[in-house]
Structure formats: structure tokens, C-alpha cells
Amino acid sequence: MNRIMKHYLSVWILSLVFLIACESGDSKKGEISNELKPDAEKLEVLRNQINLGLAQKSAWQKHWAVKTGNFDASDFELVFSDSIDPMEMPEKNPILSEDPLFPYQLPHPEGNGTIDIYSYKVEAQESLDKPLLNPDSKVIWYRSDGMKERLLFMGPSGMFEEGIWLNSSEFMVMGFFQEEEGFRPMIWIINIENHSFSQFKLNELVQEYQQESYLNLKLKSVDLT
Image (cartoon, rainbow, N blue to C red):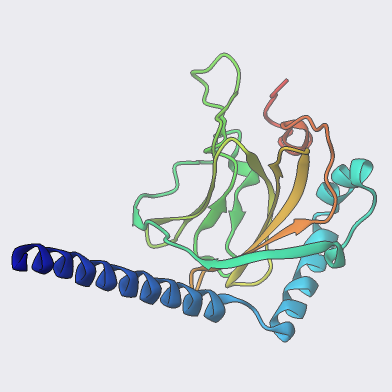
């Protein structure tokens, strides 16, 4: 009987430790989430930045507005903010001047490398008969010191379509997610200094959307048809 009681007591203690550890982990996650969540003042700054980006990349806004109706930053809802694991590694920018995607690189405003949002999605090497679209998308920063950072990654459920430097530390990405009900325009604002980002979604979606349609408009030197 004593052995049985000791066995049950051990199981109970282990279960209690496990529950405490889980609660502690959840608490830490909550603390991290609260630290990254922008306050009302910061959220207003982010919305102003979205409007700035939409104004400068009006082709993307107009492209979607044909289906969703006109929109601005007030129509975007903050989904969440999170930290970035940049998976930093040595790699120089492989997109050289003769590459058809070279004109669509996005140089850092102060010369610290360039951001690329197309070369992982679109394969357009001379060895290929025609360009290919990969199912996944990446936002990659090739720094001037020869290092590479992966800032964002997305699977087949969406695509990064456009990007713009807001300043020397923040970069805005425009694209979409495919949900069960349809396609929804999305915006990401990345801070490359503290390695964090905020994700926004438009309050409208469309049931039908040709996924490569914006890239066909944007990438004049690449025929995706």
C-alpha cells in the first residue's frame, strides 16, 4: 500500500510541476506579446506610415481597390505584432545587374544593402524556358556587410507583392492572404533594428483573385503569362 501511495504521490507532484511550468510559459508569452503590442500612440504612427506607403505605391492600392473598393489605413486592422528570427547567415546578394529581377530590388535608403521580395518567389534565370512561380514567398535583406536576414516567410496561402522603405529602420510590405472565404489584402511593417513586425489585414476580401496578377503588372521584364 505504501508503494502505491508513493507512486500516486510522485505522479501528482510531477503533474503539478508540469502545470506550473505551462502556466509560467503562458505568462511569459503574454508578457512578450504585451511588450510588442503597440500602444494607441504607436498604432497611430503605424497607420500614418501605411497611408504614406499606400500613397507611394498607389499602383498596388488601385489594383486591389478595383475589387474591394477604395481603402486607406483606417480600413486595416492590426492582427498582431511579433518578433523576427532573422536566421542570419553569410550570403551576398545573388541578384546582379544582368538579372531580370535586379530593377525590382529595394535598396536601403542609407546604403545598407537591399531588400528583395521577388527572387525567391519568381525564378527567372536564363536557363529556364519561362519564369516559374514558387509556392512560397520570402522577404530577404541582403546587408552591405555580406550577411543575409530572412525577415518574413509565407507559404502557398498568400504572396508578398510590393514593398517600400519607410525610413532607414522600417520597411513596409504589401500582399495578400488566401482565406476560406476569399483573398484579403495584407500589410506588414518591419523594424529591422529591433527585429519585430506588425501585421495588418484589410476589413474587406474578394472571392476571386488571380494570384500573379499584380506581379504581371509590376515585373515588366518578366513574362509570367
